[in-house]
Image (cartoon, rainbow, N blue to C red; front, side, top):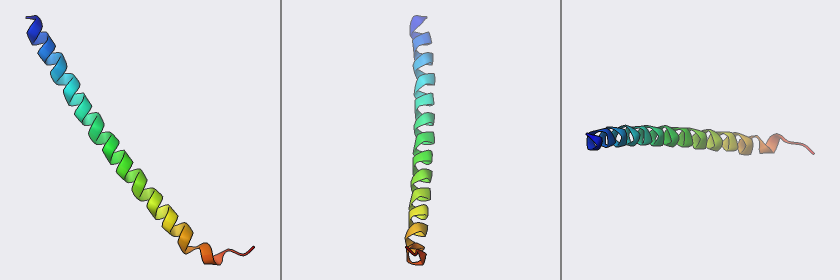
Length: 51
């Protein structure tokens, strides 16, 4: 009986770990893309600056 409970707990925790990993991956990729776009816009507008 204890083995079944342990199996269910491990199954759930494994599923949550996979879901959290996918979520973290998506957030990281999104953040990276936004940073690249922001940097490109800054570099494109570099010639308009006057000091």
